[in-house]
Image 1 (cartoon, each protein chain N blue to C red):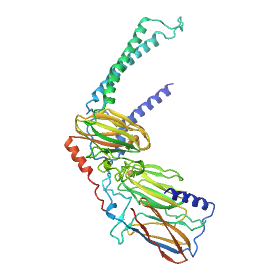
Image 2 (image 1 turned 60 degrees about the horizontal axis):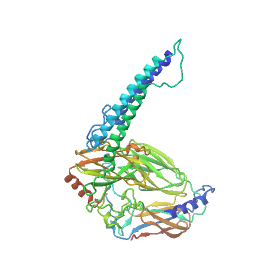
Image 3 (image 1 turned 90 degrees about the vertical axis):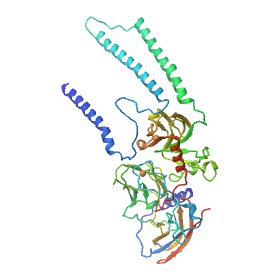
Image 4 (image 1 turned 180 degrees about the vertical axis):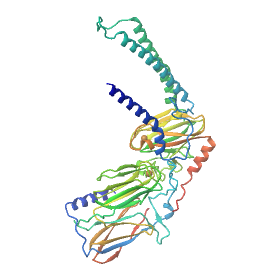
Length: 291
Length: 239
Ligand SMILES: [Cu+2]
Ligand SMILES: [Cu+2]
């Protein structure tokens, strides 16, 4: 018995060591990047930096849910330990198997139910409805199409005419036309802009239309508290508004294959003038490549 | 493409069962020539690709789907796979002992079009200080999907069945190339000079095929006798 216990202890210590070394190891083997990311991620048990207008509402929801769950966890835990001791097997005591009809437990159950209803109907549903479903008016929002593929995020901007051009899977060329834009056939497609980076304005609502070329991915902007599955065959809008400029991360939150971890892009939140300058630069015909 | 792979399957199927024969003394005919581009080279300028996804890809990468060498007179087309399509009968040919090399260098593939013989080894190398994930997309051969996270990594693959297919990198969406597996060693890819040369051919009547990823397939009938060298040019004229 003693031997077994010490082995378990050793295994736990080894696992803890490995777990604590994992981030450093991951950093050592990951290809170096020269673009620094703003904000803080993965501080002990805290949420990442929030630079969105609505993110705090999601955070509050998370915090309230955690607070209630903590009360439940501790309460039930104490009750569980109490029962273990109070009803332990001992001479002269016989277990009986009928339900106990006690008043206090009924009140407790009703209280938990009420808390859950309040969480769901009072907080979650209204917050979700306004954060998720009520899209800002189209003429006020900055619109980007986001096309996921194994293993990259493609961003499609409508260009100066404000209209997205026609795309066709038959026209897709992974190197020269990843979106399959019909630049010859559709006049709206002529000025459309393709990028592997997400550039958005600060202090203006942004609508992203999420779709996928192959499997299910998930468009994840930690600093915006936005996460939306990308489903092939569907174009799903999400919206958010940034309140601070900076460079942040776009991640894929759905295990989508071998290189899921490398499915990452950068999001640049910029003042409107900087964004316009970038779009103008990106909208120019591609530079000629000379060997 | 589709038509080609059907033909490839048929020819591959017919060739099965025959044994690899020795090289004969009269197998020394040559078919060589040029792949000419007739059209406006300005319309097919190479462009710089967006490589911003990976900060480790520091060198500019150019598009490779159409490469016209306009300094040549007449302008020629690069990366055209010229091969013998028909006329070898059911003769079997041995795979070369030296492996074919596919290098991932400066975040693009080297070469862009690669021909290998059934059973020949292919060495896949990562020469970049970043992660590449090579992904073969064949229909008949076994799929290859390998991550090479460190510089200098190598993988060895043997392709067993005749087939053309695309290769892509799962990390860098702009990276793509083509491999064709033949059941004979009579093929050649045009280079900067736009020329190709197929040698050590047995005498015979052949259908020669030129394939380009954007402009499709052209064929020509060529007959060679032992020791003879025949010129055969192809002209691609895109609309
Ligand atoms: Cu993904
Ligand atoms: Cu790559």
